[in-house]
Length: 158
Image (cartoon, rainbow, N blue to C red):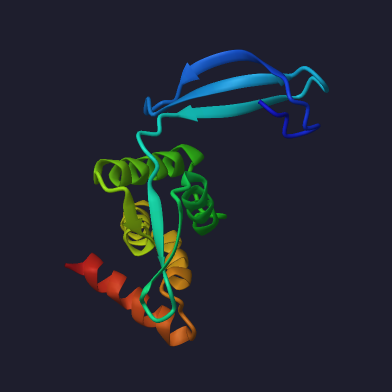
């Protein structure tokens, strides 16, 4: 495993244990070059899943491999400066990854993944949900935020 600090090619595993939700193995490593310690995660990948991106006109566009890290970065950004723990973010991302893998499809539209993230954030944190929606649904005016926030308020009152 390459060291993220000095790019040395060899590191030594100091500790291995399963994550809390048992979906990955967490490994503490020490670089043989600079001595820095870092953590890696090992997850099972059942098969290569391709994400089908949509063009601006709604037609299918390019395909790229499913990348859990992209979802994690988006969710982390939406939850920035919110009282949402990294464990809860990891659980949400792991749940989305499981949903994608259990669909049994080799290709999945990016829109379907976006909706899974929206649904997960809706239950996790309403502000993070609105933040993600503003980018995902391409809000362009303050009125877009107001309309979306009012649908959340209305749903909460029922």
